[in-house]
Image (cartoon, rainbow, N blue to C red):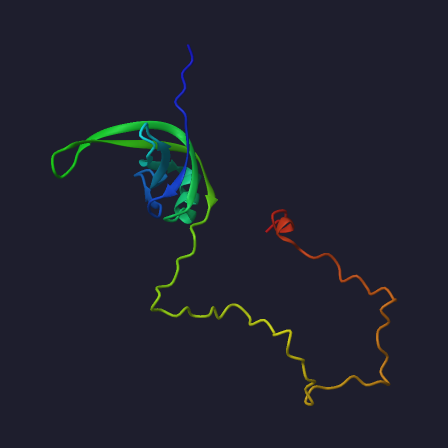
Length: 176
C-alpha cells in the first residue's frame, strides 16, 4: 500500500523569511504563509477564510528562501504537511499547520507601497529624466562641429566586427 503526504499551496508570505543554522551548520529558513479561501454559504453570503501555515526549508533552498522571500510576496510552496499542538498565553490549546518545503517559488512580488497622502513622493535619482519630445534640442555652440574636410564614415560600408560580447549566458560558462 502506497503512502503520500504532499501539499501544494499558493499564498502570501506573512513575514520576511528568517535564516537559522543547526549545530552542524545546515541552514534552516522559515516564514509564515497565509492562504485565503472565499466561498458562498447557504445564505448567499461571501465568506473569506485564511489558513496560516509555518513553512520551513532546508539547505540550499533555505538560502534562497532567506534571501528572496519577503512579506507580502505571493509564493508557491510544495512539501510535506505536519502539525503541532501547543498552548497559547491564555492557556488555550492551538494547532499549528507546518509544511516541510521541498519547493518554494516566487509567484508575484508584493505590490509597491503607496506613499501616505501627506507625503510627497521623492524622485528616484537612479532614473534618468526623459527628454520632453515637445522641446527642440538646440545645438550647443561649445560642442565641436564636424569638419566637412574630414572623411565621414560611409553607412554602406561594412564596419569591422568588434568581436564577441559576453552575455549573462556566457558568464555561466566562463572558467572563472
